[in-house]
Image (cartoon, protein in one colour):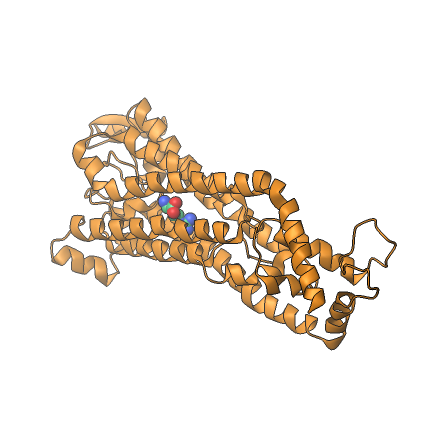
Length: 388
Ligand SMILES: NC(=[NH2+])NCCC[C@H](N)C(=O)O
């Protein structure tokens, strides 16, 4: 038996004790997971795709924020929801004796990425904007903005027309174009927002400020959790809360044994189920609810400017492959039941992400056509402003 096992290890084949079958060696070695048939292998591959998608999902939004020097397109509540969900996830990894090192590492990875994004949002939304505003509040700037608002001729509508009367296209032109662009997605912009000067940099930084500060969202990363004799993979880190993996490898237990919480759990005999399920449902609620502030923000702004759709595309793929990885591994009722919070969360998030992507397409490509109306509205408001 030992010789057989050694031979199999050498040939990159391991032996799954629980299933009494040969399994893929490197997966067994590094992920402590048993892949005994093609379905298991597909399940594992799906889990890996899910992990990679989560690892890169937030990078597009980070780049967009960096480029626009603003974060007005993404809801802070949405991101905060992600952070809260990730904390549940991390707590689950630390408290749940059944968690694997990969789960913990993945949870740390998600949390780190999301925290970076949140810090970036806070920086652009508050600090950067404050500094910018201070600069823009210089009296010279105020004078420049006021000047063009004063009608110079009785026939002057006060609105510069591109390519029009040869009027000097300085600050005033900027004001017109930038405001119109910012308003393009919004049918009824707040009147005063039109008068707000757009100082510099990316157009909507200042204008959209109000919109971005009151929303948040949270998302949950996927953890790769491969438990050796466990038939169900938990690539997305949700597995942290699963009540299904009692046969955790020794090293994993050693890794976590220092944590009082886990010890306590063991002493009280609540190996996984109750707390794991409870945390799982809480996590699911936070993750699912987290999309709503983003959806609402898009509706409220009537625009998706500053939002990178790839974050949601990656999240969608990550959630779909995550569900696939679970279902391909086992369709046993007990396993499905134990995974229900993670499955339901992933499915609902797929639907919500699809909705956000459709919102993006609508506001970006269809609603754009109605921007002429917005432009007229803007002109009307602008004229009104001139009269006052
Ligand atoms: N910080 C993260 N990316 N967390 C992952 C969240 C996963 C969760 N299913 C969601 O889509 O919201």
